[in-house]
Length: 320
Image (cartoon, rainbow, N blue to C red; front, side, top):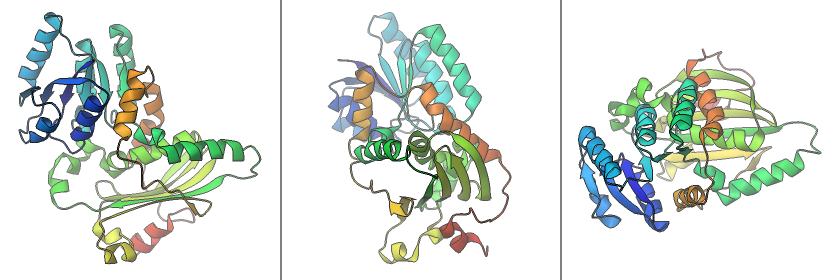
């Protein structure tokens, strides 16, 4: 049985980590969040020590280590801009780090963490759960077989509109220095998936940018041309989705064929945890390509609409 601590226990994604720790037969011994609305812990580990101040949490983790009861892993579900510091904290307390996406906001942070891995002998793991989704694995295998005889690249369209209320922009997610904006905050797992399936980035451009709210652009990958559109604005939803009373629209097509992966998300965190515990997992270098891409997207000047612009983005944004 491995001993876990968790930073960011009050966040949206934290219960998936608690479930993964429990489902893999391990124990959560301590958790921390500056918000104390964390009653969900009772459903998994009611005896876990809980802290609302990082300094007291730090002292507790250090005390456990000195008593010979150190934690083996620290799971990190804190806001994006704190991931780097919390990963360092884990490694320096002789624990491996399991961190939510995005692993860090800037590519050079990966280089620094790599050095700390070498210094401490501990590992950093990223939650890239789409890579363990059966439909995505099957698609990757299909592409690898097909592309050997294909004469041109795949044409891919990525649409992800997940409308958010006013609270979103008041929270840390509404500060680009803390969240990285929509490309980083809501797009990174899709970008990681596309790079994993279709190969390395050859070229990228941004066509429209309200970085905290909506962006669209184009990426050329080794095996695909990708038109993408990301938004948290309800007004950008297709009309048929609005009429159904839904607030999220997710679609990925390649050569006009829809990639169906709406099911099978329930236990992906558990699958990733089990893979880590079995000696696998996705480390710093697996996370690097998508971190480099979203950093580039965040800092590019928009070139305006052109023939490579996502058609839904043209429909929704062109006249604005």
